[in-house]
Image (tube, rainbow, N blue to C red):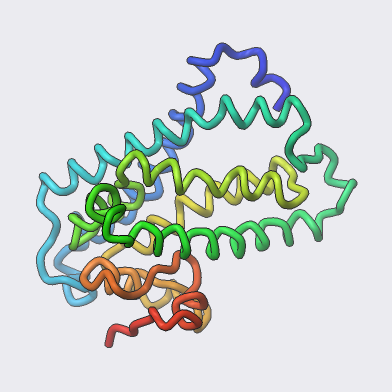
Length: 241
């Protein structure tokens, strides 16, 4: 991590953007090719909505997702400033807390993020914010994997807010944060698959692409990211038969 301080701000931003963009292209591109291109006839019956997204929609999903990744990458400057001045709870030696805690910290990050994401998402559905901000994401009523980060720039900033919450709140190792950020990309893409791939559901309260598709067609329900717990507790969960 110390080597990053020697890179110019622009190249540091470009480096992180390249890494995030590569992950996004791989994580969204592989299932898109699998389900929407090569397997569109084979998996037709598993599609939640009959129609496939138009080329124009796919272009816009990628465009807005790329803008979001540009905003996310800009956060590296503030992140390194906090890290350099010891404001975060980062630790460098795994032995300080052990492997068990490192694994637990990733789980804890996911739990914290799920709560953060639910309430930020609910906030985005306030009539003012929805009209001027979150509506952009909901224009994609028939989402594809490319839709995962297709946000208004203001919403991108709010979703990025989970990083300072985590790094200030709990002790964390660099490896744990890297895994967590990768999980965000993977899971946000997963819930926008648009197909009912049953083998990907591991436990009862796991949020799935089916649950999130309900949200894109009826925005009053299913605000969760990883789990349906908050939706069930708050009465905003709706199961799609």
